[in-house]
Every structure is written in structure tokens, then in C-alpha cells.
Image (cartoon, rainbow, N blue to C red; front, top):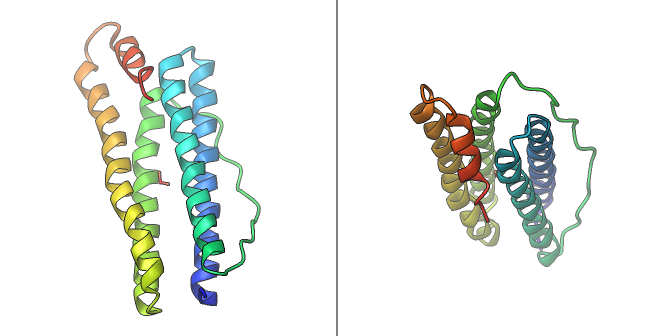
Length: 162
Ligand code: FEO
């Protein structure tokens, strides 16, 4: 059976993951409005992944005999200055999420909740990937900064994301 403190913290993380999903979907809508369909596709896949993260935690709470309680999800921003600004926010948002996951691991450790600590290892590893994929897109922006049509080259590439 999961402890109360851990249950509350994991429910908060469900909310944070759903917010991430909502944020990325809002970014996708913004990118659609610029007709950057590849960028928008990439971000929509990202939004779906975040929903998957929320459900993974949801299932863990239930498997451990806890109670899932869903709260209000904050409204995301709807406008950005540029596609680059969007990806800069993705990178900083993922760093923030990594911090939240690390705090959950610390709590699982101090609560002697070995099952949750083991469960969270997947998220620790996932965050390495999440930060890396945001940084990879930022790197592409840097590479094509001076090239005419560079934005459309990235757009074509991001359209390939599965
Ligand atoms: Fe669920 Fe992007 O971390």
C-alpha cells in the first residue's frame, strides 16, 4: 500500500504531466498557426507522450492500492515570439520536470518506498531523453540560423517524428 505523502506527491506529478501535455498541445496549435506543420506534428507527438507519462503514474498509484485524484490543469500560454522561443521554453520546462522527478525520488527514498523509487527510475531515464531531444532541436536552430529557408528544413525533418 502506498503512503499518503507519496500518493499526494504522485497525484501532483500527474497534474504536472497533464500540464506539460496541455502546454505542448498549445505550442502545437501556435506552430500550426504559422503553417509549420512539421514543428506542429513534433509537438503534438510530444503532447501525447506527456499524457502517457501521466497515465503511467496513474496506473502505479492504483496498482499500489492508492487513490488517484485529479485537479484543475492550469491554462498554458497561447502565444510565443517565434518557433525558437517555443523550443527554448520546451528545454527549460523539461529541466523543471527533471527537478520534480528528482524530488519524487528523494521522497520515495526518505519514505522507504522502494517500489515507487524503482518505478521512478523509468522517469529519471526518460528525462535524460526529454532534455536531449529539446536540445537537439535547439541545436538545429543554431545550425541553420544563417541559412535561407533553414526553418523549413527543420520543419521537414521534425515532420518525420513517430
Ligand atoms: Fe513528462 Fe517531458 O516529461
